Structures are given as C-alpha cells and as structure tokens.
Length: 277
Image (cartoon, rainbow, N blue to C red; front, side):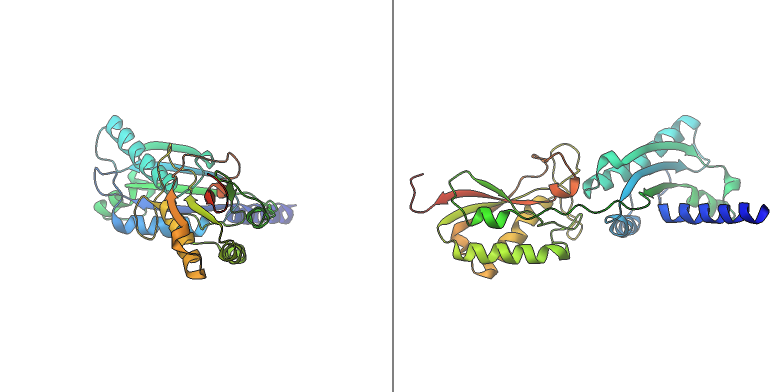
C-alpha cells in the first residue's frame, strides 16, 4: 500500500511540474519600476511561454521586512501591477491573468541565507506562476480564404483578413507556418495590378485601444510594425509601392475570439482601376 501511495505521489508531482512554470522578477528598494536586466529576463520568460496552452497566470508581489504593513501592501501591489502591464503590453490575453495580488512582506526566515541585505533583496520580488492546460487541447486549424477573395471581384471599401498570417507574440515577424500564406498572397497581388490598398496592422490584449510594445525595438508601435512588415515583403516581391499604404490600428478592432487572431493584418481596398469611385 505504501508503495502504491508513493507512486501516486510521485506521479502527481510530475504532473504538477509539467503544468506549472515559474519566474521571479526582483526590484530595488522601495521601487516598483522594472530595471533593465530584470525586464530582459522577463521578456525571455515570455518568449518561453507564449506558445503554451495556458490555463491561468498568477502574479504575486512581495516586499522585504522594512516599512509599515500598509506601505508594504501598496508597494507589493504596485509591483504586481507593473508585471501585469508588461504581460498586456506584450499581447498576453488579460483574461488568463486570474490573480494580481500584493502580499506585503515575506518573513525573513523563508530565505536560506545569512546576509540580511541579500535576504531583503531576494524578498523584493514578484512571483509569476503560469499553469498550463494539461493535457494540451488540440490546435484549431483555420482554412485560408484571403487568396480566394483577392482573386475575386473587389470594390472600394472591401476589407480582407489575411487568414493564417499570424505573428509571433510581441514581434512584427511571422510564425513559420505563415510563410506559405504570405508567399501566396504576394504572388496574387503582383498579378492583381488593378487594385490599390492599405495594409492595416492590429494587436491583441493591450489595455484599452493602445498599441502594443514591439519587443525588438521596445517602441509602442507594434501594429504599425506589422503592417510595414507586410508592406516591405510585398514591395520586395514586386508589388508597386504606389499601389500600397500601411497603417497601424492598435487594438481598436478586436475580433472577439482567440486573441492570436487579433495579431493580424488586413487589406483595405482603396481603389479599383477601371471602376468609378
């Protein structure tokens, strides 16, 4: 019986290890701004979890033992909020973040260290716990329709969603499986010389309608960068720049479904030669 119980316990621990990923962000004394080294470590962690099937994300802020209880609660909450904002700025679905809590101070004895200042430094932190869906859900496959629409009859004002043209979270370049899609779209638009259009970039998951942060440049213009990525690709492919414009629409028009489909680009037809506007 003991052997069976031990086997079940070990199996449950392995399952838990598979389901959760953890990361800690450390702060300076009395601060909740994220220093550059910790910010870089956090972005690396985000890149490691962005393609996971996530069930929930918990964010807990802590302080060292200095300061009053009320002061430490406010400071730890501000630290947790700062980390949540980074998740949002980098296009993580806010609905997955179920806890953003300031816990105040950590008891000094929790950390196994003799140096008091090191102990305090290790306690000035935010803990991030990412729980995965286990077992992972089957991935949804969306059949492309943009190619058919671009080859059909078009009029001014038509908007075409470039299906399966999906971007990596927080970046203005495509996931590998979208390479075939953009090549097909480019081939069609090189031949389709009668239409003029605007390439519209979108982002997901930011606060309100603002733009997301481009992790590569650290500028808040990711929707513009995505539209320009497609613009530059099409120009290199042979589409005349005189027929194209590009713009970023931030998060003004979410689709309301899976957030990954808001990391998208659409084509708005602005002119069809041979027809009256």
